[in-house]
Length: 422
Image 1: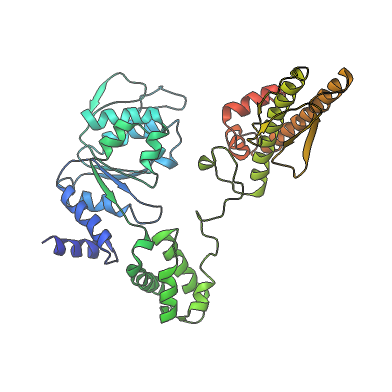
Image 2 (image 1 turned 60 degrees about the vertical axis):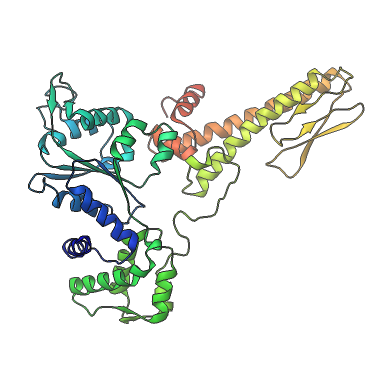
C-alpha cells in the first residue's frame, strides 16, 4: 500500500528518483500527514525541501484549507512579526491600518516556514507560544487570538549547532522537530542523477522547442561522480545551460566537463589557517582576508608590547623568570648577558631584545619604537574602517561583516577614531 502511494506521489509532484533515502522521506511525509504534528525538514540547499510540505498538506485533512509558504530569511527582522502575526493600526511607523498575519489567514490550513533557522529570537518566542497553545497577539495589540494552523518548517542549517551557539531556542527546536524528515543530498542519490538529467533535458527541449540532449556512457559516469554541491537545483541549471548553448545533442564527457565548476562552493581550501572564530566567518575576496590579517597583526603587536614591557620591568631582577609569549606560544627565559629572541608569526625575521639594557635611555627608545609601531597600525586600522564604510555606502552592519569584526567593535572603533560622519 505504501509503495503504491509513493509512486502516486512521484507522479503527482514530479519527483524523480529511486533512492531508498528519498522514498523513506516520502513515506514519513505520508504517514505524518494525517496528524497535526509539527514537522522539521532538513537538508542542504537545492535538494527540493519545498515539495514535502505540499505532500503533507495535500494528503492531510487540511487539504481544502489555505497553504502558505513563507521564506523567513527574506523578510526583514523589523517586519517579520507583523507578517506572521499581523499588526494593529498605528502600532509602528507606516502601520496605516490593521493587518492580518499568516497565522490568522491560514486558520485551518498549513504554514510552511522555510529557512526557519533565520528567525530572530524575539519571533522565535512568539512562534513557540502559538505552536504550544494556538494563541498569538498582533503587534501593537493586547488581545489574545486563537489560530488552528499546522506548521511545517525547513532549514539547511545545522540546528543542533545553532542551539549550542544560542542562535535558536532549544525548546522551539524540539517543538518543531516532533517529526524530523531528512532529504538526502544529490551525491547520496547517484543512481538518480542520470534520471534527473534526462527529465530536465526533456523539459527544456519542450520549453525551447529544440531536440533533447542526451549523455554518452562516459558522460553519465562523470555526472554521477561529480559532487553536486548545489544539488538538484545546480543539476537543473547546468542541464538548461547545455541545452541552450551546445549545438551537439549528444553530450560527451569532454563537453560536460566544461560546465562542471572546478572550484565547488563549500570545498574551497582554507586560505588563512589562524583566524579566530574561523567557523563563523567566510571570506568572499582577498580584501576581506587582508582586513582580518591586519586586525590580527595589531593584536599580536599589542601582546608583544606587553611581553617586552614585562621584560623591561623585571630586567633588574637577577633571578630567571619565565614569560609566556602569546604570539608564538613559546617561553621566553631571559638569562644574564643573553639575547632573547621572540618570533613573530607574520614576519620571517625575529625581533631581538637585550633583557638588560645598558641605560635608561635605551629603555625609553625601545618603548618609543613600539609606540610608533602601534600608532602606524592604528592609522592602517582607521583607513581600513573608512574604506569598508565607503564600500558599503555607510552601512555599518555590512562593513563589520567585511572587516570580520562584530558590530559593537566597529561602533567602538568609529567613536575612537571620530568617524561618526563617515
